[in-house]
Amino acid sequence: MLCMSKYCLILLANANLNRNLPTEALKPLIEALLSKLPDDPSSIVITVKSDANPQSPQSDLKNTFTGLAYDPSMVYILELCTVLALRDGETINALGGQVAEALQNVMRNASNYHHIMVARSMYYVLHLLHASYVSLTPRILNLANKNKEQSFLRVPVVLHTISSFKKDLFEKSAPLVLQGLTRCIRGAEPLRNEIMSSPDFWVILRNLAANPKSAPTVFDILEGIVAADSPPTIMADNYESAVNLLNDFASAGSVGSIVRQKSERGRSRRGPPPKQEKKDKKAEYVKLRSFITLLS
Image (cartoon, rainbow, N blue to C red; front, top):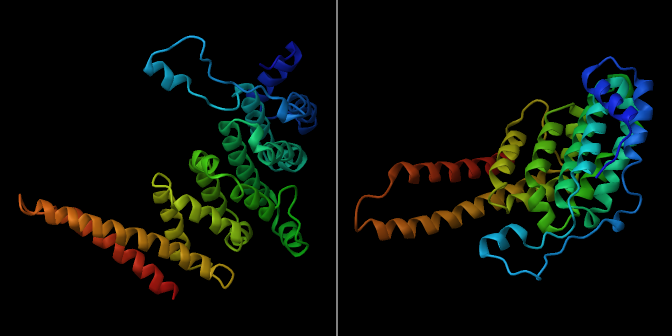
C-alpha cells in the first residue's frame, strides 16, 4: 500500500477542499503522486490460489485465481491526478500531459496490471481526451487540426491501444470504455469527427456489439450517430463501417426472431402468443433495417 508523508496528506486535503489552489502548487503534488507508481510493472506480485487448505465450494468461488494483484492505492493515485488535472483549462494544459502519460503507460502494459486498473485508466484517458478538446480555444484547435497535433493525447493512438486489447480484458472494460467514448462523441465537434473517421473506433464498437451486456449501449451510440443531421457524422471514411455494424445488429435480430418464432409456435398449442413482445421485436428489426436503408 501507498505510504505518504504527513505533508503530502495535508496537500491532498487542501487539493480536495480548495479549488483555488494555484496550478504551480499542483505540479509538485502531481509529480510526487506519480512517482509512487512502479517503474517496472512486471514487478507487481501475482496472487495465486493456495491449495494448502481445502475450502468449501462457496469459498472457492470467492478465491479463484484472479491473475494480477489489485492494488487500490495505484487506482487512487491515477484517479486523484486525473481529477486535479481536470479542474480547469489551465490545469489541463499544465498537468494533463504528465497524467496522460502515466495512464497510457498502464494501457500499454495492460498484461502486467489488474483489469480494474486498466479499465479505469482507459476511462480516465478518454475523459482527459474530451476535456483537452473542450479546453482549447477555436483558434488553437483549428491550428492543432491543421498540424495533426492535439496537445498531449492523439485520438488514433488512444483508440488503437483500446482496440488492441485481448477479448477478456475488452469485455471486462466494456462499460467504462463505452462511457468514455459516449462522452467524447457528444463533446467538441472536431473530436467527434476525428473519432468517427477512425477505423479503430468501429472495431471497438463491433467487438463490444458481440457482447450481450454491452450491445444495447453500442446500439444507442450507433442510433445517435446515424440519426445526427447537423453536422453529419456518416461520411465516406466511415460509411462502410457503419453499414457493417448495422448489418451485424440486423443479422443478430433476425436469428433471434427465428428462435422466438419457433418457441412461440410451441407455446401456441397451450395459449395465445405474447403479441406485444412480438410486436416490439418486429419494431426493433424494422428500425434496424430502416437505418441500413437510410445509409444505402
